[in-house]
Amino acid sequence: MTELLSPDALVSQQLDRALTLPARFYTDPRMSALDASAIFARSWQLVCHQSQLAGVGDHVVTEIAGLPLLVVRSDESSIRAFHNVCRHRAGPIASCDGRGAQSLRCRYHGWTYGLDGVLRGAPEMGRTPDFNPADVRLPEVRVQVWQGLVFVAIGDVPPFDDFVAGIDARLGAHRSLEGYEFHHRASYDVACNWKVYVDNYLEGYHVPHIHPSLNSLLDYRSYITETAEWYSFQFSPLESGDDLYGRGEALYYFLYPNAMLNILPGRLQTNRVLPRGVDRCRVEFDFYYAPDNSPEVQARRAKDIEFSDEVQDEDVTICQDVQRGLASGSYEAGRLNPLRENAVHHFHEIVRRAYRHALANA
Image 1 (cartoon, rainbow, N blue to C red):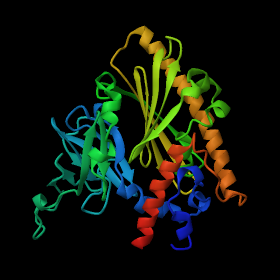
Image 2: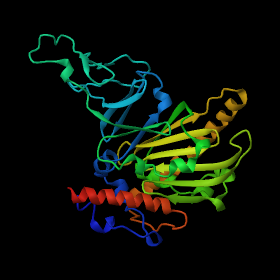
Image 3: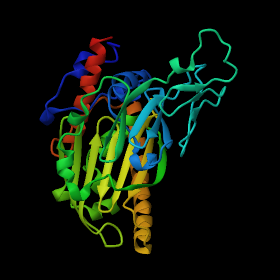
Image 4: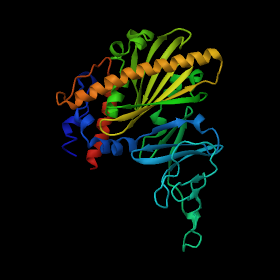
């Protein structure tokens, strides 16, 4: 661990003299396990929007740091999250998202749990000595619903109010995210470390060079990036035709360590960057829109989706190129631009702190 996390690489850096994280933090195979334990198991994780859990029994499945999870609306007022691991012989309780389940049934041997996580039935176990189904329950993890978004935590995490402090005031009542409805998910498998993708998201420095269409919508000279304790946000005046977003503001929030909220007039898009190995990640784009099925709105949504795909394809290409550069042996670390890459520095500082904690407790 000391070889990988050398103390000199973990020293906190001032923005005006900061270097990037060293290349090995993106390429060493040992980083996958370290990131799982030091970062993902110790952070709030976005899993879905409450509109995807509108009815009792609606559920989504996910995984955090190798732990399968099942998030379910257990009653009209409660959303709960359980380990998606049967207490019998570790089979999956649910394999995919679903609607209106009356119970949670393991597909391996049929053990069935209530929506409260308590075992209700176990086939052919009735005569087993000292076996009481009511004593068996799925382990539960914390859930927090904020702005209609559902977060879970499996380990020690900061207080949720600290995690999102100041965002509600910045959004204001007219841009509440609660009223949106889930539209669809687009997933991209990217041949890069998850931190490469996050780094790319956190700066508009590359926009004039990589995203010509996006650059034409944003005012790069007025593009501002600010940081808070656990998140950063980028914003710019927006100029587009009425058939796309119209005028207003483009607002991009990054919630440490791997969630993004892309907020444009009439649309919320969330991104989750999920590690799939040291040089692979999956990015899940979930699209949400205000309820309106008029032909004009439908046409605007189609253009939004097409535009998003174009920008994402450009990001995938450059992130994969960067991963190859990091793995080439030619690069160790580079100087950050204090004006344009302050959010990258902010992210790297939180990552360094997480690694220092892991090293101290190794």
